[in-house]
Image 1: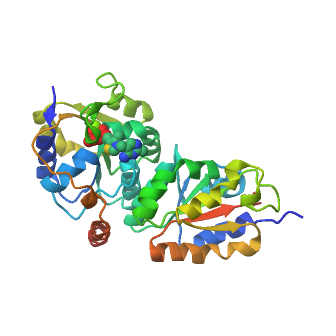
Image 2: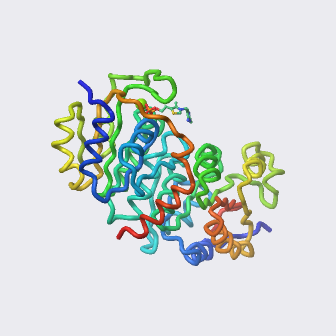
Length: 190
Length: 168
Ligand SMILES: Cc1ncc(C[n+]2csc(CCOP(=O)(O)OP(=O)(O)O)c2C)c(N)n1
Ligand SMILES: [Mg+2]
């Protein structure tokens, strides 16, 4: 069973309060349209690096919760990040993996090990104190209230499939004006 | 005589530059007399990474959160992180400051004239990427660090401080 990715993102948008949201690839393209907000951070520069940018934000602003919307292919490119994050142990860190089973942005070629690997098991083995694997919207909506408040780092493996039509806008994701606005908004958000 | 670098002076200069976060993957040139004391120093929060490109990205997140950071690594780690340096550092205009140990650089030899290919290419690669770099060979070079770091943050451009010899 899987969730429609946009339903999954809309559910998060409904329960979002002041969280920083770091997003990559398909999740980012859709998130900035579904939930525009100055505390959206999409300036991750290189594939695989979203969670590492998120860790820097979480360590730098322990008073703000950071939610990372990672890709499954992206996380596979930077698996060591799980150990780095578990070791740094930011309580304000929620690491979501949008597990669509593919490199969707690049032609939807399956990721190696699609359907056979477990991101929540990787995270537990790396030392994340809490993990979830969620494949239904009802469960996601029910758990979100806890996930957005309990101590992290938490990994949430979200089993999703593409849905809806969302235009891609890579220049927007990496736009420096938006990064500056993010920095300003974060400074003002105490 | 081999020029010397004082580890205590370097640490003082790092603090003078307003840096409190150290992100690191051990490098033989800096482990013993920089990283180990920093791990014990309450003025620093050290974040250990599994791979150096993570470190670049962590420094970017810290920058957007209003903090200065220094990434310690070996030149091999810098070479491994070129894509993050390209995307987040240069194109993304993040002032990532890196201290890079030139392991096994021959005493008194310029990196570009080293017998070792891996060392010879470091400065030309950085030049091709238009990334500012400085070579720290002796104590006289240490006072260049804080102004270079200041400039990196002022201009939102990455900076590489190359360590020619093991500080003691
Ligand atoms: C180092 C590097 N290798 C390959 C690519 C090409 N690339 C861009 S996006 C992408 C797929 C990302 O997959 P995933 O993280 O699962 O995100 P999705 O597209 O599925 O949302 C790939 C392979 C790249 N940008 N950088
Ligand atoms: Mg994917």
